[in-house]
Image 1 (spheres, one colour):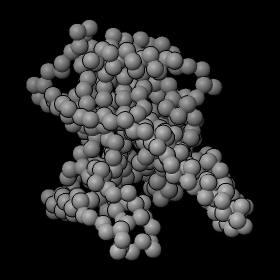
Image 2 (spheres, one colour; image 1 turned 180 degrees about the horizontal axis):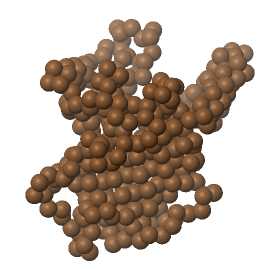
Image 3 (cartoon, rainbow, N blue to C red; image 1 turned 90 degrees about the vertical axis):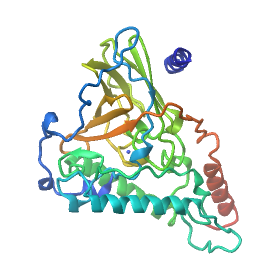
Length: 360
C-alpha cells in the first residue's frame, strides 16, 4: 500500500506573520541566531535504535499528526522571557483552558432562539457547528519558536517593513475605492479564502483542524504529505540542484539529505505569496529559505524543527521546533476546500446583485 501511494504521489507531482512581533524594534532581539547545539531541542532517547528501510535509509514512515500541539502558540508571551517551559501551575491552567474549550465545542446551539446579531467565525450561531475542531493536549512547551531564545519572531528587515507598509496602503486604497468594502474580485481575497494553499509552514503548523502529516519513503525520495489542502512534497535525496531561481511556486522546490538519522529538507524558490503564521498567514519574500529537520526521538515521537531564513522579511533567521506523535491509524480525509468553497461564489454573486440593485 505504501509503495502504491508513493508511486501515485510521485506521478502526480511530476505531471504565512504576526504583525505585533514584526514591528518590534531591532534592539529587542539578538542579531545572530543561537548555536544549534544550545537550542532547547530534544534529542533521541538513550538506547533508541533508529529503524532502517530495506535500502538502508532511516525509516521515518508513518502518520505523524501535530494535533497535540494545537494549544501551543507560535510566539511566546513576553512574560515568559527566555523560559520555554511552563510551571506546574501554568500547565494546570492550560489544561483547564483546553478542557473548557472541548466542552464548548460539544455544546448545542439553538439557531432559532440564539442571538445572531454578532457574527463570528467559529463557536456561535453564525458559524458552522464546531464539533470537528481539534484542541490538542496540554503541553509544557510555552511556544513553538525556540530561537530567538525569547520565543518571538525577529523584527522586520527594512525590506520587510517597506513591503508591509505597501500592503497596508494597498488595502486602504482598495477600501476607499470600494467605499468601505474589502474586495471586488476573487483576486482581492486571501489564499485562505480561496482555498488555494497554506504554503509550506501553514500546512504543518498546528491549527484547529487538518493536522495530519504522513511521511512515505522510496529509494532516493521522501514524500511529505499534509492533510491541510492535501499538499504533498516529493523530495529528491540524490543531490540534484534546485530548479532555476525564476521558477517559483507556493510550496517551493525542496531538496533533501541525511545527516546521520536526521532528514534535512531545504526549500527554496517560494513565490512570496504565503507566510509562516498559522494557516499560512502573513507574507514573506521570494528570498525565503526553509530548512526542516525530521528526527525520531523514540519509536513514537518525531521532532520537527524548521529554520526560517528570509532577509527580505526579518533581520535574522529564526527557528521553531515541536514534537509529532505517531498515530498508527489516522484518517487522512480528503480536504475538498476549493471544490466545496461556496463562500467565494456567494460572496461575489451577492456583491454583484447588490451592485445591480444600486446598493453597495
